[in-house]
Length: 248
Length: 184
Length: 184
Image (cartoon, rainbow over all chains, first blue to last red; front, side, top):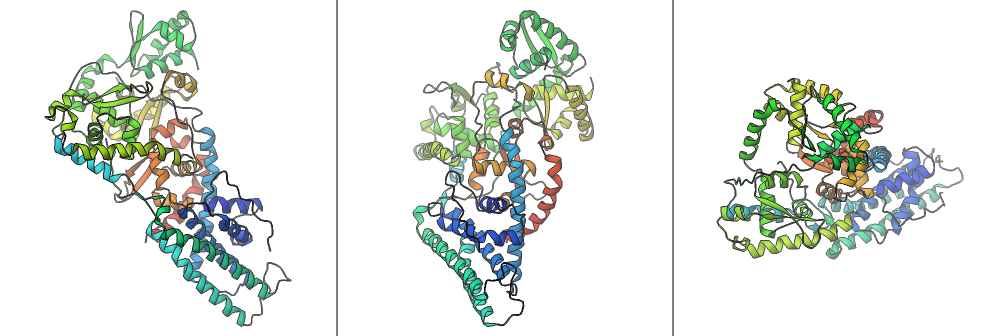
C-alpha cells in the first residue's frame, strides 16, 4: 500500500490531469494501468482535501478519481468483470493523460517563447482624406437590435453544464454497483486471487482498500451535490450560442 | 541585422514619411550611416514590390507607381463594400455607450475588435480620441456625421437608450474584475 | 512587374492579413499562381527588413522578430505577456494542433475551457471560425497576433512542431472517436 501522502500545493491550481501526471511522474512511471493503480490512493487523498476549490473543478477531479478506483479495483481483484463502458473509461483516461502530457510538454515552448521575440504588424495607416461613407444597414432600429443582441450574448455565469452534473450524479450509481460486485466477488472462490500487488496481503484486506477508496469518493461526491444545490456558489461560464461574430 | 534592413523595418512599420534625423535617433546611428543605408536599401528594392520615396529630408516606403490604378480601384471597392455584421455590432456598442475603449468593446463582443475598429475609422463612422482620464488609452466615439446620418441629434435620442446603455455599462464594469480573475 | 512584386505591393498597401483568395481576385490570377508567388516572395524577403507571415489561408507582412526590442520601445501600448496555466495549456493545444474544437480542448485538458477560450479570444490570441470541413462545428485557431507573440512566421516554425506532429496526429485520431462519445 502506498503510504507517502501527496503534499498539496496551493499556490497554483492543477487540473485533474495535471495532478495525475505529476503523481505518475513523481514515481518515475510511464502512463499505463499499472502506474495509474499505483497513484490512486494519493490522488484520492488529494481530491478529498480540495474543499476550497470551485465545484466545477472538483467534479472533474471526481470523474478521474472514479476511473482510478476502477483501475485499482481491477488490479486488486483481477477477476472483477468490467463493463464495456468501464473499459473504455479506463483506456480513455490513459489516452487523455498521454495527450495532456504531450501538450504540457509542448506548452513549455509556448511559455518560454511567448513575448520574447515579437513580429509587429505595421501601424495603422493614417488616412488624411476626410471622408464619410455610411452604409444603408445603419439605422436607429438596426443599431438598437445589434446592441441588444451583443448584450444578450455575453455569457452568464451558471452552474455545471448539464452533462457534467449527470456524470457526477451517476458516480453514486457506479459506487453502488462496484460495492455490490466487490462484495459478491468476496463470496466467490478464486484460485488466482493472489494478485500482483503484494503477496502477503489477504483478499479481505484488498477489498477493504477498495471499499475505503469508494467511501472517500462518496465523501467528495456529497460535497459536490451540496454545492449543486447551493446556487450561490455558481461559478462556470457557458456559451449561450455558437455564433460567428467576427467575420469582418 | 544590418542598417539597411533596420531602416526598411522601421519605415515599413511607420507607414508614413519619417525624417532622416528621426531615423538616426531611433537606430542610434549617424545621419551619414542613415544615408548610406538608404542608398543600399534603394538598390535592394529595385525589382521589388515596394519603393523607397525621398522628399527633402523625409523618406517613406510606398507602392510602385505602375500599380497606382490598381490601388485606386481597390480603395474605392473597399470603401463601398457593405459593412460586416461585426462592424455593425461594434458600431452599435460605441453608439449606445457613447464612446468606448477597445477593451470594453472586445469584452462585450467576446472577440478582439481591432480590425473592425480600423474599418469603421476609415469610413469616418467613428473617431479615435485620447481618453481624458488616462492619456495612454483611446476611446472610440461616434462621429457627428454618423449621428446626423441616423437622424438623431445626440445618442440619447436613440431608441431604448437608457436600458441598453445601462446594460452596456454594467458589462463594461464587469470587465476588469473578470479579467483579473481569469488571469489569476 | 511580376506576380511576386505585385503580391508584395498589395500586402504592403493593405497592412493587415489578406486571404490568398482575395489576392487572387485582386490580381486576376489563380490561387496556384498566388502560392507560387508567395513562396518566391518569401525567398526574396530573406535578409530583408520585412517578414512574410502565413496563417491558414491568410498572409500578411510584419517586422523581423530580431528587432523586437526596437519596436517594443517605439510602440507605446503596453503588451500583455502574462499567460495563466490554463491559458498556456489551451494555447499549446491550439498552436500545435493548428486549430482545435472546444470539445477537443476540454477533452485533453479534462476541464471546461470556455472561460479561458473567451479570455483568449478577447485578447486576440485565438479566433473562433466555422470548420471548413463541417460548418456546424467551430474551431479555435491561432491568430496572427499569437504567431507574432511566438515570433514565428507560421505554425510549422514552432519549436518541436515537426517532431511532435506524428504523435499529435495519432492522438488526434483516437480523440475524434472519443469525442463522438462525449458529444452524445
